[in-house]
Length: 425
Image (cartoon, rainbow, N blue to C red; front, side, top):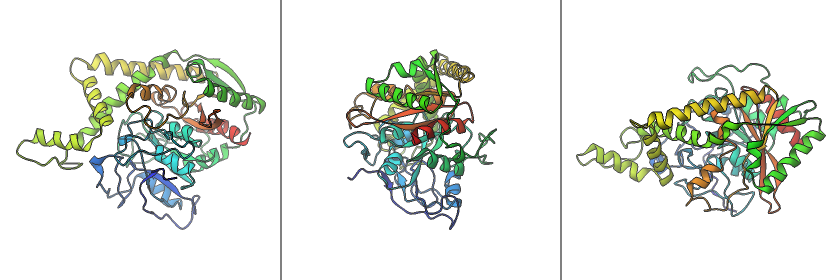
């Protein structure tokens, strides 16, 4: 099956030895690779070749990994289906005729298809966890600050993190071990406290683990998704864990808050693509405003334009307090709710996505449907917490379902331990 998982297939060799020697790790096409195109899935950057490696790429190469290519993605990371790419949509190898999720759909697809051992994606509002769930693989969204963002083409700086995608929890943890850690070129990174051997945490030992189940993130899911979720909770109980229900009332407003913040940051970040500093030329004919507009009209796709316009509106004079400030207040409320729930639980669990994979084309004419599908993942980014998506079986229609575990800040070991229990059951 031709599924269009890669934008550029160009081999980058790593060191001769290291923890990832002999392994292939595909890289999402918004992560800089020296001498290899980095397009962000956009016509605006279709000829851009960075002169430097991102920190995570440097660490992959030092660890002995081979990078087979750059994976397809929603344009500038803006989407939930990997259908907004200027290089065409990606098919889901695990569910033909359906989307692979997004925006890291290409990364999840090449792992699901067996064309890469592992992959790197980026997660701004669920963009690692969503495709992991839709493609039946594992995806980790690290705590904000655990992994360097140096060399990542920015969409929404305060929300996004680079994260691993792999067939199993242990392999995803091994990849996280390689890319995690402070970077002097990214001032938001820091040394985590406590256990940092993430692969060792994938021992499947959940005896005595207390799992909180947020009712708000379960009740809105499709019946088939809920059924697989409770099967997973039953399996964890059989392995010695216990669960109790918790409430996160703030998540009712998380999707709105997320999109106001993300679109506002995107409108600022994408202002640099004017055909002069970055991107394709608008063809100067005496008026710079018209030149900039022409470059952006030709270079950006519909979803990117929509988000730039909405973000600019939210930040404009007279509306900043009405939208952006309120969204930041809601963000603080979300973080408070998660912190309180995690004081009484080791991890929180929910379906990763409230729905099975969409059919191809299903959400393109209804952006709101696509945005609302992020209801279970965006709150985690607002709270800057770690989360993992682990396969939890399939619906009766053979569509993959994922379970999400959320931990306290820099509590990656706890979510990896919980996820690995499902790997071994």
